[in-house]
Length: 393
Ligand code: CAA
Image (tube, rainbow, N blue to C red; front, side, top):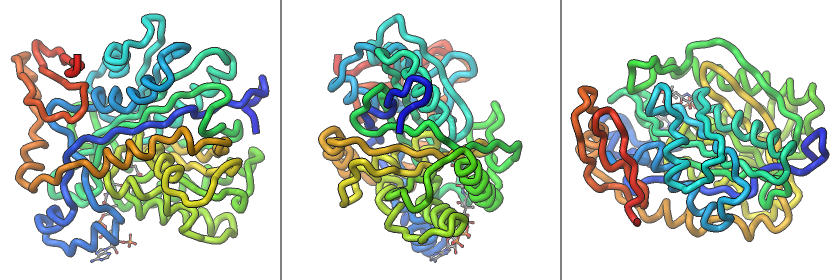
């Protein structure tokens, strides 16, 4: 399948993610909440909450995620950086501008931030595909990066996480081509939102799970109406994963709608990394995609994968990607597994202290202690300015 007007194949050439080195075991949170640990492990399907240090944020996570791609592919041809996040650090300046400097991208690169809760990376990906179809000599770096934090002791707290995914979008991509057909849905609802003055979102949890399923239904109908593939063609499905059980619920719902076999094997591989990391909002679907490609035992060459993106508020999209020959040679599976395995569990008290991120709203200067495991750090905030450094230079 090709990308439309110019009949060129476009899609994801490289896919890399990054997570910080600390996490909270959900068992520790279950003890604090006074609930059976199975509620989180079985009921939500989650094991760990990935945690940032004070010197890590969406900018440092994003730069770390993109670095292996640029090390392998170079920066040549990249003339656009699209940064998707719910966890904005500035009301005006795009977080991607910091990432652009840290990664030494060309000064003749356009950089912008996109927001629509957990959906924005999908908009970025579609825009990137449209752009490179028109400019086949160019590449677009799409980065999704988020830190999910809910109120202490709330029901949503167990679904927290963080992480970043970087994708290089080009013609003749090495991993996946994106089909031009998609199914979309927008509705103005209040299921999860974060007014400018709040650090944590407001969330109507149960309602949000119902709207997620309804949006999936609307997207699928639109996808079919637009000439999309049949349910039975897909060998794998990846869903937005606020927690891994939500992906399973989504899959059963879609199977029922499509009169298809509700075989959870077709979404199981996509859930592996999410359980270990937690919700990373805009990055979540794409960490699930990495998980599906890296943990599916069968050869996926030439096979289509169905993707469902959902961002509260709400915007959603169902689309498809086709796995390219030789994709296995270009996955960063070893690096990703090492990133997940080589982490340290922290106590509940340390988790609490890590939530108290310095926030000098009076303009005073705060140096951040060195906690980041990567090379990029938020070194200090001074006179309302964030100072990012490459600690390896
Ligand atoms: N053993 C096994 N399972 C258990 C259990 C036990 N001991 N105790 C409870 N459970 C099960 C429950 O039966 C339930 O399963 P089902 O959904 O299959 O019925 C599950 O654990 C969750 O328990 P509760 O129903 O009691 O729900 P909760 O009060 O813990 O809240 C939640 C769950 C509403 C999802 C909450 O975590 C939340 O608000 N999360 C944030 C919002 C969210 O993630 N929404 C998802 C859709 S919106 C979206 O996708 C955007 C986004 O990223 C935020």
